[in-house]
Length: 571
Image (tube, rainbow, N blue to C red; front, side, top):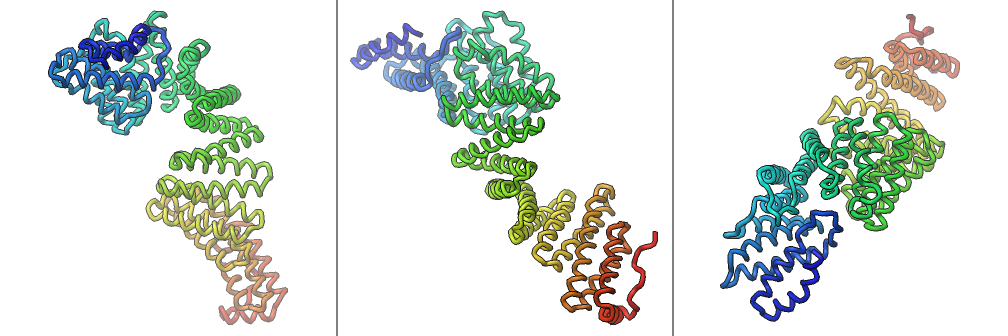
């Protein structure tokens, strides 16, 4: 390739001067420059390869369209378009790459080797996958593999891909959509091919080998085969260290992906210290990548920080976990301006976890601030994907209500409790089995907030509805699942009724106090809970002590019976 690059300037001059052999020679040399090296050589920058591809296609297109167009010119146009398609892939121009690949396959009268056809199908499969056309991408990937299996490349085509590369792309396409089991099977076939290669041949396919091992690690992790993933990942680390990083700088993003996947796998197998250390290494690699390519590096850094924060939490390292989550939240805030549909949900989750850290350390006001940010982010995420993020929004609002109540912001706690309940009710309309228990839970949260604002009447309504929902659920499902929730609801209902009765007596409304006492007595009859019975006894005793004449008369007016002298339930 070095000699070909030296010849480019004089050949360009000959072509411009109209020398008959100038343009064909220029096309040949440009195509040679575009052809990938099959030995251990540093690849030319994508922008330069793209310029060569544009020039080669233009030269051969003009030659093939001219009056003296020859078979060699049509063949050259097909080859130049195939090479140009791969150059376009490297720059992220997937639609243009697909168009170039399709045109290469359709050049009229071109004689194309089976290897070149497979190489073009390879570009087509990647372009189709990157433009989210899975069925067509899988078809092209399978055709590419078939073509490589049934051809022996000629000398000039030996660097135009290989069966190993085609299999790796097929596996990558399967894993992208995702069909992980099939993907892993093909990656394992690639791995078997690699094991049978000599060291010299391995050096020629080092980038493909790195990709195979790294993507195999990710696929095995997705399938929950963590021990196998650790084995593949450990092998991959050996092939992406030292010399490989200097020769192939593009390995750095793959290394960041590998370390993150490995950290998750170590954590899943119980080796938490190694998981933490590997996640920290992944963060460092991502920061180095961000210095070279800010957007790509920061996107990888998001994944690494999530992994690190999780394992610091598992190791009960609150300070480190909090710092990692804070950095993650700040990073997602920036990236959300570029891709809100991707990074707003991650921001919401990070702030949610950060709020939990603050709450665990007793920093309740900071917990409220983080939860407010999380709820706002989930609200934005729900605008993109209501089905996925509305349940999370309802949960975040419920948590926010609880935390605001604990810091004295009672009115805000009521507002957020109402919104959480309204969303959960709406969700329960389409999936009652999942959300009816949550409706009962959020009724209790709202009731507690309402009591702090002095609105015991509405709080009673919430508790009673929660009891009704839970008893109905216990009739149709395993009652043990809801026993704890029902116990908490009945305890809170009894306490609220006792308080309500006392308040009405103090305000001079014995008739309303009697109504609360009657509800409390009915609750005592149906609830076999000591605290409920105790609340009933104390409420009746206090009422008799506070206003004996008024309460007894109001009871007789309401029931025609004398005020009861005994209210405790006999076992």
